[in-house]
Amino acid sequence: MLKQLSIYAENKKGTLEEITRILLEQDINILGSMTDDGAEYGVNRMVVSKPQEAYEAVHQAGYVCSVKDVIGVEVEDKVGNLNSLLKTLLKMNINVHYLYLSFNRDSGLPIMVFCTDDIWEVEDGLRNNGYRVV
Image (cartoon, rainbow, N blue to C red; front, side):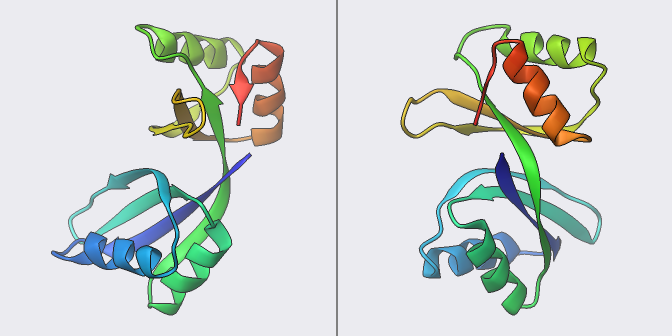
């Protein structure tokens, strides 16, 4: 089970630089990220090396943020693997709220990070279908 840091931040010049600087100062590595923008505010979702420390540092800097469980599934880097994963989830009757890409630094393989309901059940189901959940 991966922990994701979600940061709600004003959509203005320099915001992402400030957030990444805060993480740099705490020696926290960003392992995967996605930014959703809005007219005034956006959501920066990140899998980081030290999620609780990242939360505390970013929160202390005045950002609204949270830490939540997400699923990471290691997939081989070849055409159609994302589609295969999504078909498996569809067969399991699972809705994916959002997903983004990261990489396993040890194996070099892609990791699809996604959010869904009933994370424990989904994790077990994916393992039973032959997927490597990280």
